[in-house]
Length: 296
Image (cartoon, rainbow, N blue to C red; front, side, top):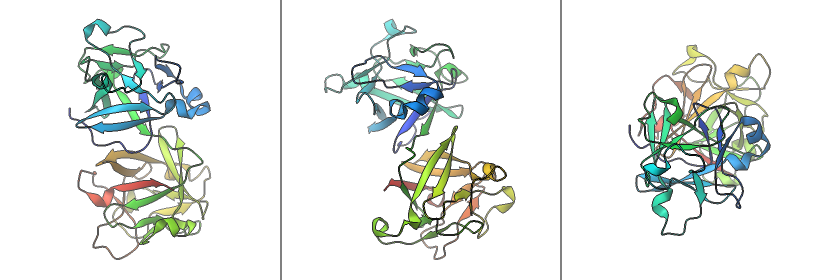
């Protein structure tokens, strides 16, 4: 297991074992708790966290309490209620606030630097988070799903790291999305603005101008020009509009749920405007499959 790369933006943190999300509470609270998706939908900011890189470790910051996740000390805190806290960073306590983020079984394990224990999501009917001294591989109680979290009213520009071009939603329904060079996207037309909608653990990308969604088609469309569609939302098309987001190198990769392929923004020597869907698996340095997402 190794430390994962940077986490850009806001994230939710969900337990694999209980399917509940970590709630950072209000500034007056210290103990963090677990809640279901219904509460997260009603009070989204309570479930939004940012990851601040400190060397190879992270401080995990609650946007609701304005405090950091606190792992405390040693085995005396193992498997006890009310041990995982949120705490202000006052400098002298920073060692309690540092965590390792480890990739394991396709999920993440979150290990406290100060106690040496892992966050434990416990049971579906239990709101408390524990700290546990077990090996996380094969142990879903110690595994977490960390997903980007976007507010519905926010707008974004989306740029290919490979080509430097921007995702353009200007096309009409039934046509194709494409990429465009734009020297100053902040002054550019609204064609480059997108909203990102959370659907369960996946996402839909909605163009501000076309009012249509990015469409990943199916597995018959790999490595071809003019395949990434712009499609209105309707029951027959819904599965084509869902995407997974994976963080890599401090940015994102977009994987179509319907095709299983990755959005390919091409390389820096590419002079066209066609997006591809690529079957290859993203890796660090494969910039064609990596995207930056900027809040407008």
